[in-house]
Length: 47
Image 1 (cartoon, one colour):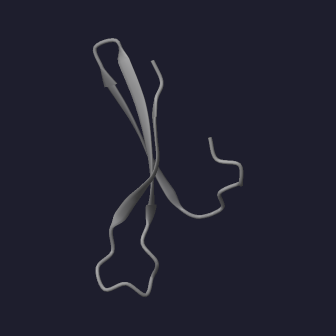
Image 2: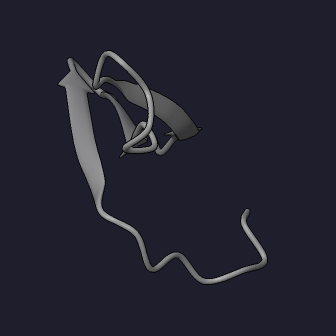
């Protein structure tokens, strides 16, 4: 679990498969990079 608050833009993706659930949180790359993309900052198995 993260101990600090997040104040940036993030994309959360819940994933449901049969009886399993997970959550992935991704953040955008810094603006000074050449190619924008998302990178994973958190992934948790929920059930």
